[in-house]
Length: 433
Image (spheres, rainbow, N blue to C red):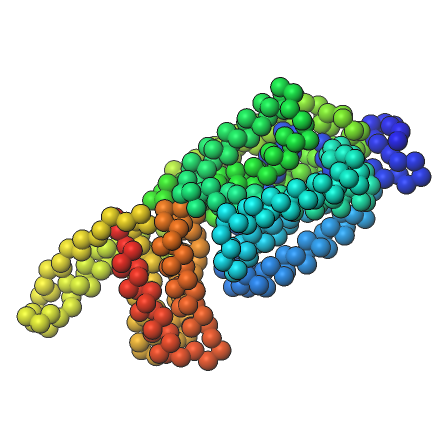
């Protein structure tokens, strides 16, 4: 191995280092890519309506194509590398979701399984190459081990993060603090003599749940403890920052070549810290500003608006003792129990709308309206699920039953009505203050 002009080359192959230097901007892009990848997959699955199976197959195919391009390059190319990272974050998350949601495997077991798989990858990698150092990714086989480890870390990070924030009911606010704190401890350990390879991979796993928790903190409604930016605004903000940082990396790589092993970031440490800090500050300022000015208007009414609507509807109903043509009887105040899930009125309102359409035989209208329920439920998952995972899964399954009934090739009014009745009853039982 020889070094020339800041570029590491292998004699006869001109195979250059294939991964970026581990810098402050590296970690910023890595954390942000988690949220962008997960949000994009959810958008395809729910908003576009491709469903989990089609989305999973599509993302795996795109990832395979991107990795082919990555392996065919002879040196680190920022835009190709980070495209692969975003796609790996999507597929890694989808693998864990498949285990948890489709196969019904507990988060405790899936976390343990992915931890074992990662240990096996590292063991085989080390046995073959005698190193796990990130600075040594300069052969096809080492790069294959590297991407295998990266994919497994995303699956493990998803499972362990979900375990902490959902099964242990930490929530995304606490999760953000805890995972950021663990990364800080890992960084301090590396500064005081701990293995750089070990601390790198620990931090890499932890950035997945940190990015997810941070994204949820920005996107979730204020009722759930978030800043209510919404998934679209948050993803656009994060994506813009990623593009700016990656473009800078690409320009530096084009200008200076690929940094030699052990060399600091292209452009110097001071510039690297400045850009990383500016990115974090921009997200904080823009995120806070958008949260303050956000109107909170959505297609579904707020909890307060729904309560008013329900009261009006109740007051206009004919009772056994009232008149049908006179003034409406005063609405009875509905007393909600205190439940961990909180106010579910918005979901109940959409369900009632769908029920009304199905009762009239308008199954097409019900199918169109139930899309709002699917999107609203998916958007609120990060805020609701940690509150009471058991009740959330019950409602999630019943919503899936409603979607299945309405989206059948030849939907049955009776099946749709039965599924909606079950869902409406459960929402009423789980609704709280």
